[in-house]
Length: 383
Image 1 (cartoon, rainbow, N blue to C red):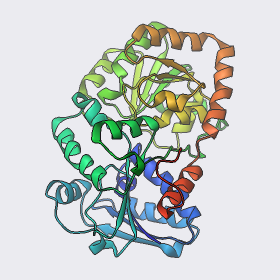
Image 2: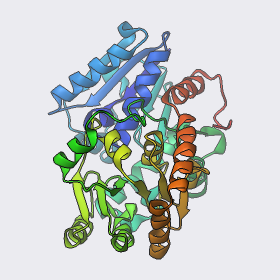
Image 3: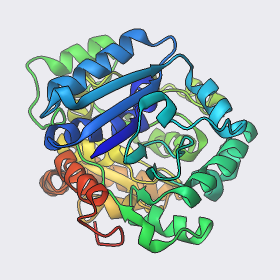
């Protein structure tokens, strides 16, 4: 079997969908010894990152000689313009060769020949559920490109049951073409602290000895302004880790007015597990999520979690964290205070969180991904 994979997000994005793409494909190529993979990316200006991504996959592959790579001399913006906005009828097979399947982990499919089967991961439908949290040009692009890709796809992978329901309700996707594929947690996220990591983090980032951590792209849907209000009465530092994205200016302005808020920006994965481990708790107040990977990463590091009741988040948290309605500022203050003050509760949630995170692995995700593309499992089967 030959499978083409759009690896653009893996090369260009540090967190979020980029991390999902890298972790899933690392696990897939380690398992699939009989598959020829054809990876391609719009990697203009990203020569070193493309080389690093290619070398990383080859190191992990069961059969490195079955991995083939093609770089497209375009940026991701230009690829989107040509294939999605202008709808240039150039099939991807003309660039990478004939494949049986074409997989995109980032919402949209490139043009393909009719005989090629297609699979796409749709992480969430926030642009339809909360359109006010997107800049108009991006929202219009997603409103056109994502439904078109969902309608074309032979297989649609959803990050959660909540996203699966949204695909059926909002886009009329056929249930028998949608499979839930849960994310995993990288082995880097463990409860074992490194010697001296607390002092090193304090010196590098200006952390207080006790802090509440929030992880995720800085944008309105993450609900950080309410979180800042909720943390202020607690007298504890709030550390918000994430790349500044669209419509983030009011969030950043509010953070700058509050002395208890620290926003160090995007953190490379090398420091992220330590930031989780040293935090008093993770606060995850999102208004809408397709999955909520920071919740599992925190649990895997032994950090207790207070999370939102919105969309997919309770599905991920299970019984291993405290849940609060995302707009209830007083409720967030009370839940975080309870966790900060109650050592027995922290210990109980730490143990429950470690067990919960252990149930989500990239190997399990890769095994299901391969079964679905091989036709060994129906899409509508339970995750």
